[in-house]
Image (cartoon, rainbow, N blue to C red; front, side, top):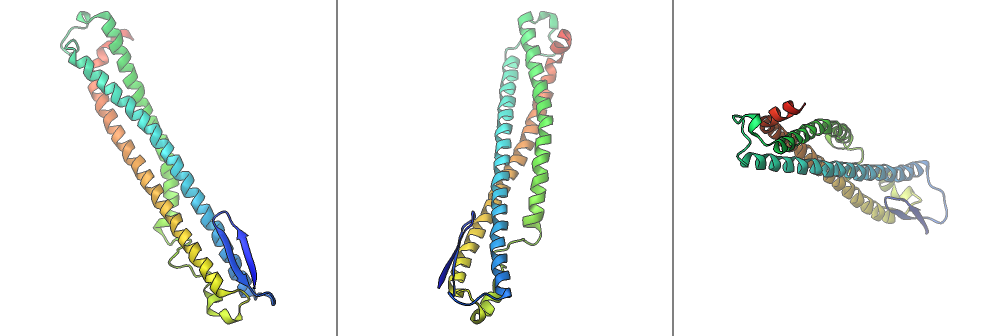
Length: 226
């Protein structure tokens, strides 16, 4: 027997063939398709890992924005608790230094509001990629289904006519299907990361909307200094 080893980036393909004789066209085609299935699975794996990474980076950026909104919310509440900030109090009665601070706070809230709106462009890009991945690998028939993998079926069906050792090939196939299941686990990990990002952005939008509404009490200071 001759050992065939292909050092593929997904996994090492390894099976035995007869020392003499030549494979049939059917066998050659099936083994080539088997190797190309590794190519496809590798592309899927790298794409799922990359897009999950991109999604996690956006989640980090969103967390930074969310933290800024939380800080501004605390700042606004602190000013309210001083007792000097209310809509009934005449502007002239408020200390000038405090007026400057309040105007600065208001402008920071306005900028955070703009950044929250602009962040949707980043969410939309990730959503476009997500929809493409769902359509290709989840919503419809899977391009590589570990439960319906039939590339080598004819090789096993006509095993006595094959040059390849079907026992070693069967063992290699089992390992490949196990790796393929792990690739789909990576897809699930990506889905979790994307859904967390999408939900997180929705929560941030609601927090920003509430802060913007509360900040309207500061508009007189912004207008007075404009």
